[in-house]
Length: 178
Image (cartoon, rainbow, N blue to C red; front, side, top):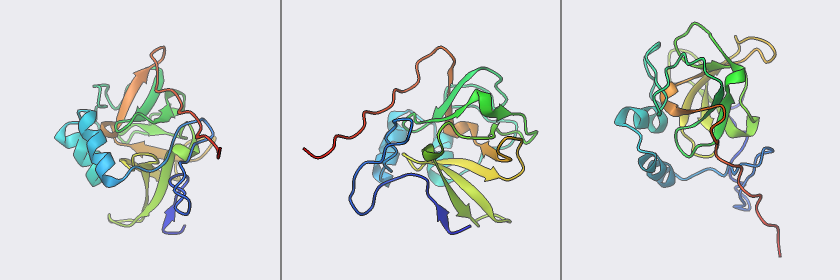
Protein backbone atom coordinates (compact mmCIF):
# COMPACT_ATOMS: atom_id res chain seq x y z
CA UNK A 1 0.00 0.00 0.00
CA UNK A 2 1.23 3.48 -0.80
CA UNK A 3 1.55 6.31 1.65
CA UNK A 4 -2.08 7.36 1.27
CA UNK A 5 -5.13 5.84 -0.28
CA UNK A 6 -7.50 8.77 -0.61
CA UNK A 7 -10.93 7.80 -1.78
CA UNK A 8 -12.33 11.30 -1.81
CA UNK A 9 -11.41 14.92 -1.20
CA UNK A 10 -10.55 18.09 -3.02
CA UNK A 11 -9.73 18.06 -6.67
CA UNK A 12 -6.39 19.77 -6.04
CA UNK A 13 -5.98 20.86 -9.65
CA UNK A 14 -9.33 22.59 -10.07
CA UNK A 15 -10.43 23.31 -6.50
CA UNK A 16 -13.85 21.92 -7.46
CA UNK A 17 -16.02 20.33 -4.76
CA UNK A 18 -16.15 16.53 -4.70
CA UNK A 19 -19.50 14.74 -4.34
CA UNK A 20 -19.83 11.07 -3.40
CA UNK A 21 -22.02 8.65 -5.36
CA UNK A 22 -24.58 8.96 -2.59
CA UNK A 23 -24.72 12.73 -3.12
CA UNK A 24 -22.71 14.07 -0.17
CA UNK A 25 -20.10 16.80 -0.46
CA UNK A 26 -16.81 15.18 0.53
CA UNK A 27 -14.62 18.19 -0.24
CA UNK A 28 -11.96 18.20 2.46
CA UNK A 29 -12.20 20.92 5.12
CA UNK A 30 -9.17 22.97 6.10
CA UNK A 31 -7.71 22.52 9.59
CA UNK A 32 -9.35 25.79 10.68
CA UNK A 33 -12.74 24.70 9.32
CA UNK A 34 -12.36 21.33 11.07
CA UNK A 35 -11.58 22.98 14.42
CA UNK A 36 -14.47 25.45 14.03
CA UNK A 37 -16.85 22.60 13.16
CA UNK A 38 -15.73 20.65 16.26
CA UNK A 39 -16.50 23.71 18.39
CA UNK A 40 -19.88 24.16 16.68
CA UNK A 41 -20.77 20.49 17.35
CA UNK A 42 -20.06 21.06 21.06
CA UNK A 43 -17.53 18.24 21.30
CA UNK A 44 -15.92 17.60 24.68
CA UNK A 45 -12.17 18.06 25.10
CA UNK A 46 -11.74 14.27 24.90
CA UNK A 47 -13.85 14.01 21.71
CA UNK A 48 -11.75 16.79 20.17
CA UNK A 49 -8.57 14.94 21.20
CA UNK A 50 -9.78 11.77 19.43
CA UNK A 51 -11.02 13.46 16.25
CA UNK A 52 -8.51 16.30 15.84
CA UNK A 53 -5.36 14.90 17.48
CA UNK A 54 -5.65 11.22 16.40
CA UNK A 55 -6.41 10.05 19.94
CA UNK A 56 -7.86 6.69 20.95
CA UNK A 57 -10.40 5.87 23.61
CA UNK A 58 -9.82 2.95 25.96
CA UNK A 59 -11.54 -0.28 24.85
CA UNK A 60 -15.00 -1.07 26.27
CA UNK A 61 -15.48 2.54 27.50
CA UNK A 62 -16.49 4.53 24.42
CA UNK A 63 -19.65 6.56 24.00
CA UNK A 64 -20.80 8.36 20.87
CA UNK A 65 -21.06 12.14 21.01
CA UNK A 66 -24.75 11.75 21.84
CA UNK A 67 -24.21 9.15 24.59
CA UNK A 68 -24.72 5.74 22.95
CA UNK A 69 -22.41 2.99 24.22
CA UNK A 70 -19.69 1.45 22.03
CA UNK A 71 -21.68 -1.82 22.09
CA UNK A 72 -24.98 -0.21 21.06
CA UNK A 73 -27.20 -2.75 19.31
CA UNK A 74 -29.79 -0.26 18.03
CA UNK A 75 -30.62 0.07 14.35
CA UNK A 76 -29.55 3.32 12.73
CA UNK A 77 -26.73 5.28 11.14
CA UNK A 78 -23.39 6.35 12.54
CA UNK A 79 -22.36 9.79 11.28
CA UNK A 80 -19.17 11.78 11.79
CA UNK A 81 -18.99 13.74 15.03
CA UNK A 82 -17.70 16.66 12.95
CA UNK A 83 -20.13 17.69 10.25
CA UNK A 84 -22.50 14.69 10.26
CA UNK A 85 -21.29 12.83 7.14
CA UNK A 86 -22.99 9.37 7.16
CA UNK A 87 -20.25 6.79 7.68
CA UNK A 88 -21.58 3.40 8.83
CA UNK A 89 -24.91 1.59 9.04
CA UNK A 90 -25.81 -0.57 12.02
CA UNK A 91 -26.44 -3.27 9.38
CA UNK A 92 -22.63 -3.44 8.89
CA UNK A 93 -21.83 -3.42 12.64
CA UNK A 94 -20.57 -6.55 14.35
CA UNK A 95 -19.13 -7.56 17.73
CA UNK A 96 -15.40 -7.89 17.15
CA UNK A 97 -14.66 -8.45 20.84
CA UNK A 98 -12.18 -5.55 20.78
CA UNK A 99 -14.22 -3.05 22.79
CA UNK A 100 -14.59 -0.57 19.94
CA UNK A 101 -17.50 -0.20 17.50
CA UNK A 102 -16.60 -2.35 14.48
CA UNK A 103 -18.06 -2.39 10.98
CA UNK A 104 -17.30 -4.46 7.89
CA UNK A 105 -17.95 -1.63 5.39
CA UNK A 106 -18.71 2.10 5.24
CA UNK A 107 -22.02 3.36 3.84
CA UNK A 108 -20.15 4.86 0.88
CA UNK A 109 -16.44 4.17 0.31
CA UNK A 110 -15.99 7.83 -0.72
CA UNK A 111 -16.99 8.92 2.81
CA UNK A 112 -13.74 7.63 4.33
CA UNK A 113 -10.06 8.03 3.58
CA UNK A 114 -7.69 5.18 4.41
CA UNK A 115 -4.14 6.32 5.13
CA UNK A 116 -1.02 4.33 6.07
CA UNK A 117 -0.20 4.91 9.75
CA UNK A 118 3.19 3.86 11.10
CA UNK A 119 2.87 5.86 14.33
CA UNK A 120 2.30 2.88 16.61
CA UNK A 121 4.15 -0.34 17.25
CA UNK A 122 2.90 -1.83 13.99
CA UNK A 123 1.94 -0.67 10.52
CA UNK A 124 -1.79 0.14 10.49
CA UNK A 125 -4.25 1.87 8.21
CA UNK A 126 -5.89 4.95 9.71
CA UNK A 127 -9.48 5.83 8.77
CA UNK A 128 -10.45 9.50 8.39
CA UNK A 129 -13.75 11.19 7.64
CA UNK A 130 -13.33 12.24 4.00
CA UNK A 131 -14.98 15.64 4.48
CA UNK A 132 -13.77 16.82 7.88
CA UNK A 133 -10.52 14.86 8.00
CA UNK A 134 -11.44 13.77 11.54
CA UNK A 135 -9.64 10.71 12.88
CA UNK A 136 -12.14 7.87 13.22
CA UNK A 137 -9.99 4.80 13.97
CA UNK A 138 -8.24 2.09 11.96
CA UNK A 139 -9.15 -0.64 9.48
CA UNK A 140 -7.78 -4.19 9.61
CA UNK A 141 -8.00 -7.17 7.27
CA UNK A 142 -9.43 -9.56 9.86
CA UNK A 143 -13.15 -8.80 9.60
CA UNK A 144 -16.12 -10.93 8.59
CA UNK A 145 -17.55 -11.55 5.15
CA UNK A 146 -18.41 -10.10 2.77
CA UNK A 147 -15.45 -7.67 2.90
CA UNK A 148 -12.97 -9.26 5.31
CA UNK A 149 -12.48 -5.75 6.78
CA UNK A 150 -12.81 -4.58 10.38
CA UNK A 151 -13.31 -0.83 10.60
CA UNK A 152 -12.43 -0.39 14.28
CA UNK A 153 -13.79 3.05 15.18
CA UNK A 154 -13.64 5.31 18.21
CA UNK A 155 -17.18 5.84 19.48
CA UNK A 156 -16.09 9.38 20.47
CA UNK A 157 -15.67 10.19 16.75
CA UNK A 158 -19.23 9.15 15.91
CA UNK A 159 -22.80 10.24 16.49
CA UNK A 160 -25.52 7.57 16.36
CA UNK A 161 -28.81 8.43 14.69
CA UNK A 162 -31.49 5.85 15.53
CA UNK A 163 -33.55 4.41 12.69
CA UNK A 164 -36.57 6.61 11.98
CA UNK A 165 -34.79 9.83 12.91
CA UNK A 166 -33.53 12.07 10.10
CA UNK A 167 -29.93 11.80 8.98
CA UNK A 168 -28.27 14.75 7.26
CA UNK A 169 -29.62 15.05 3.71
CA UNK A 170 -27.25 14.67 0.77
CA UNK A 171 -25.83 17.91 -0.52
CA UNK A 172 -27.00 19.20 -3.87
CA UNK A 173 -24.62 18.34 -6.65
CA UNK A 174 -22.49 21.31 -7.62
CA UNK A 175 -23.73 23.30 -10.57
CA UNK A 176 -21.87 22.89 -13.83
CA UNK A 177 -20.53 25.77 -15.89
CA UNK A 178 -23.08 28.32 -16.99
